[in-house]
Image (cartoon, rainbow, N blue to C red; front, side, top):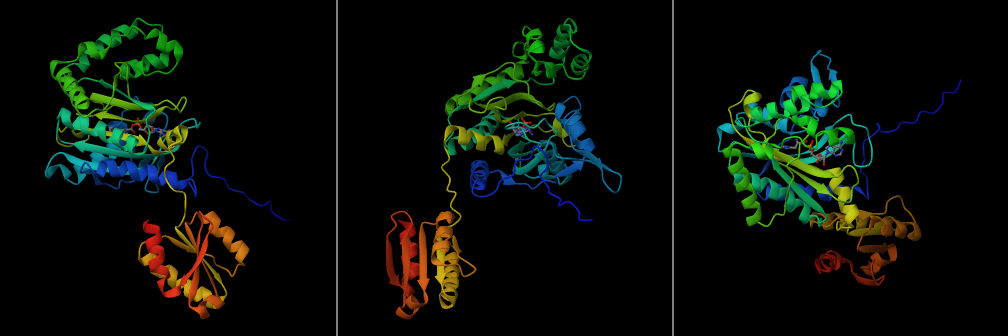
Length: 424
Ligand code: HAM
């Protein structure tokens, strides 16, 4: 009995990036990393999975991210592990474990890669999402908050984005949050909320302000705002952060109802919202988490950071038409017409690659027509065409793929000619 052929598909809700589109993905990621590197953030490579307890404690059990969306399983040693839903808890764990906070403060780190949340997939909302993030741990200085926000803004600007806004708020500190929490709990207790929402209010009442359901939004429209109950220190910190942002020309909107989806935030919190993305409009977000180091067993040090969604930022670039990256796989494409020509072109390609030029060749003895089609598809600026007769004459054809002009140059000079042409 013949078996039905099997066909496999990637898991649901996972965007894959392949050429030519992956050029945009790489450009967004690299541009965001570069903005962070310019401010002294060093790269940290984190585990893709960690002890489940790290996220439960670090991110918070009342969050959707931990309570509903984690990919949790027991490994073969029967330990409960979870695919990382975000990066901050892992960075803080690593800083504590490796004593990175024993050197100079702040510890400034950047990271990137896939994160996993079992969400309902839709445009811009994925189960494997890509982030570039940064964390600055150990100094509670409003200038550092402004730096973190400015790096994200810088990254978006460098990509050419302009149709986004920065929303910012303060979530207060240990001196004002408990009293405000009580006030909010009292307010929420008087509302006709369903049982599950009451339970959320009990664990973290702020989370109820973040409820996206219109009926809940309406109910909490008159909720007391933390902005009106900040401790003097938090209020002063917030004012100073905004003053720094004014100084460096980073535009913001204060949003006193901004509640982030993770439990660790204190004081400064922010989100970058893009107008061209529909429902999944947050392209990045972050804030301070002054209790997290202590909560995870480290020194009582403050911290601040952000996570930028690379997938959504790429969608934002497309929505704004700022796709400035090149999708060309190579700059030069070699077309050998015959065995002798192939030997020579393999050497020319090697010399050009050593000189830093991206080069591809036509393989498999294809004819001129098919090879030229490949040259076209490769996006190369110049195509080298070499026949066995050219070798005898000591020449090679260089075709300018933009003008269509082809000229013959001395074979010995081909590498220099191309380097000069590509440099103009
Ligand atoms: P977050 O707001 O949960 O923060 O995620 C940061 C960004 O990741 C979001 O603004 C969004 O662009 C992207 N993102 C999140 N979930 C998805 C999804 N399902 N599909 C596509 N993109 C998504 C954090 O993760 C914090 N760790 C940020 C942070 C760092 N706070 C302090 N330090």
